[in-house]
Length: 105
Ligand SMILES: [Zn+2]
Image 1 (cartoon, helix red, strand yellow):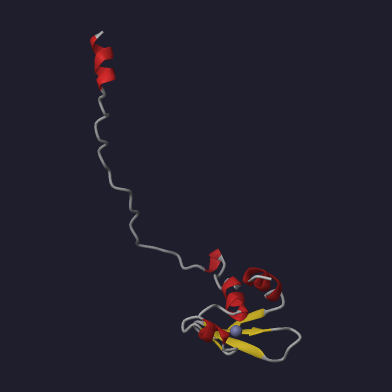
Image 2: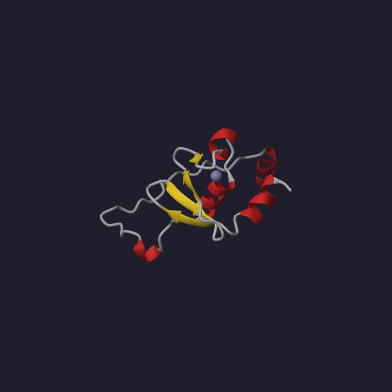
């Protein structure tokens, strides 16, 4: 079983709860103990994240947890001018010897 399969089967039971900024508590429903994952510091209380330099299953579970709020909760942007792409003049079309010959005939 490779890491991806391990992740797919392993993270199904994990429950991720956001604690503070960048800190998440990862728990399993059948286990009382949980793990604290600090994404900003790349650490997990299981110790594998910081020792293996590879995200442990708890860190990966946090990554799949999307803390992005609903669109309605986003702040309304006001007073910001609409920026249009700069107007650029197109370069002249390339003239090949073949087109010049056609014009002559
Ligand atoms: Zn961990």
